[in-house]
Figure 1: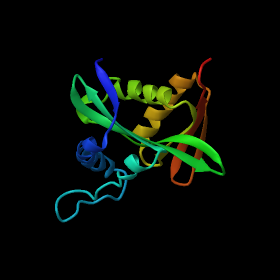
Figure 2: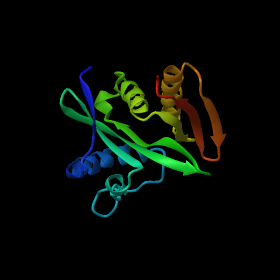
Figure 3: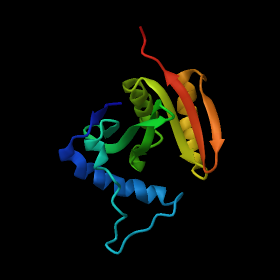
Figure 4: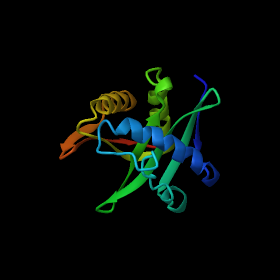
Length: 161
C-alpha cells in the first residue's frame, strides 16, 4: 500500500480544514453536530496545531491522493505527559483496506512514550478499531478503562535500544 504520513504545514491548513468537514459529517452520527446556516459545520480549532509545540497535525495520502488526517496532542495530567489521538480520519473510500491500522501503528512509532487513546461511548466502530489495533501493536500489553462517556486504552511504547 503506497501511503504517506506527512506533518501538515501551515500552508496545508486549508486542506486539513476541508477534510475536517467530512470528518464532522461522519462524526455527526455520534455527536450533536449540526450544519451552520452556510451549510458547513463550525470550523475546528486548528490554529493551535501550528502555534503549540505539543500538537502535531498530519495529512495522509494514498497513491498520491488525500486520504485523511491524524491530529496528535501531548496532554498533561498531574505532571504526567502522554500522547493522545485528538482526531483520526480516513475517507470512506479507503476504509476497511487496512490503511487506518497501518497509519495508527506508524503514528505510535513516530511518538514514543505513554499513550491514551479514547473513544466516545456510542462510537462502537471506533472502539472496536482502536482496541484491535492497540492489541496488535502492543501484543496485548495495554489497559482499558471506562469512564463517563468514553472508553480509553492506555499503553507505553518505549524507544528501542
